[in-house]
Length: 287
Image (tube, rainbow, N blue to C red; front, side):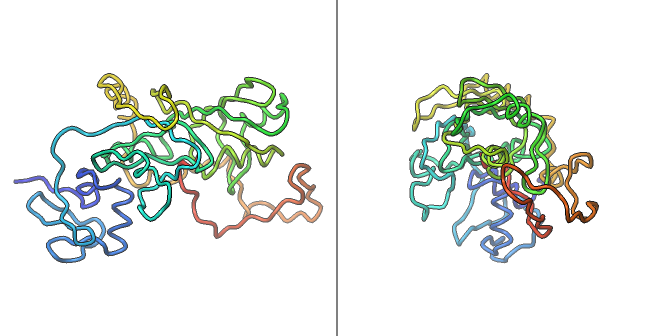
């Protein structure tokens, strides 16, 4: 008997999009299974007819595509063809591919492009602690205190960032290695400490380092793909793993914090702002 697959996994394995994006398509009612709009979690076989926006989706034949692309400043990390300067049209690859994660439009550097939806899930899971390395330029001289505070964790987005490796390179430039992907994380961390980021470049993701000029890409080698898969293999594939990990010692809780009318002002950012407890969880991988 043929093995059943979840519909989102089936769609991702065709190379149409990532599993997370497939979930969105299913929720929006844009996917049909044998002519019927399916529920989330429905399982399928290769004999089933799956369509997205009326277009028949078939299982992909052949090897997966894995590219290391040096994204220039000004390119949007989206597959939406209506967005000007989107990454897919910029690369103009002959087969359908999509980015793993994102880099801000104002940022540059390494980003993976693929047609393998399963590897997207493994790399982007928030609890998997995969390293991403950046070179950052700021608008004023870097101090030892700045480096120390960046490395020990900074309160942003109703949480405190994980401890990370930070090293000063020159008067205005530092290196940082993150294992998180909070929305505009590096920029927000710097802003909290009174600095503005003037340039941000990602130079490494896990075991792959940036080695192509801006605007160019290369295929990952078989050895790189093998090592990458070994490093991400312990990664959880469960949906729960994509949620931000609770860290009681680091989490800021508005419910637990007693009211303090005499609370001191933040000397860098002015009066402290109240937390928005209705805020949605931060999107992953935005730096």
